[in-house]
Image (cartoon, rainbow, N blue to C red; front, side, top):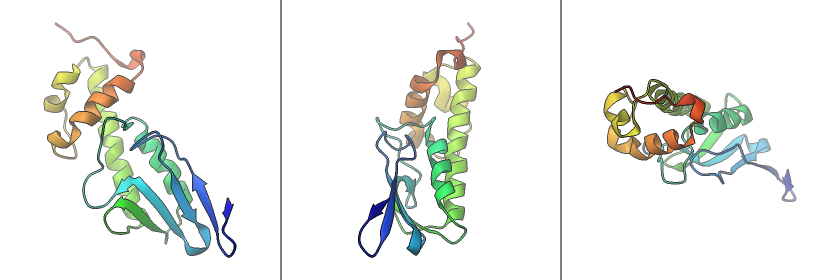
Amino acid sequence: MLDLGDRAVELVHPGRGHSSGDLVVRVPDADVVLAGDLVEESSPPYFNDDSWPMEWPLSLDIVLGLLTPSSLVVPGHGSPVDREFVEEQRNTVGIVAETIRDLASRGVPVDQALETGEWPWPREHLATAVRRGYEHLPRSQKRLPLI
């Protein structure tokens, strides 16, 4: 908790998602959460070379735990959103993570995963997410491709 005099704010590191340094600011008396790039309204979430696609859904679970039904969420990109929007984005990011996990466990090589999987967003948007997701999976969740 950070006391700003007439207002207290909470700084929360919910875990890794868009980057390893994601930080969320909660203003409890205003019921506002500044979510940064963990939530993006103007386009699908941007997976970059320092994103953590396998952990992003869990980080959004922490953000959801900070919200009330009437919270206003200020995303990193786009217009303010509500809890329902964050839930929907969390579920879709979760689909990306689970699809990566499923493909790797079935032995689908990373260079074939984009074409093999059924994705919630355009494939060209997910190339980095798939590559990073495969890199972050524990060895026990990866199967060698069948020849």
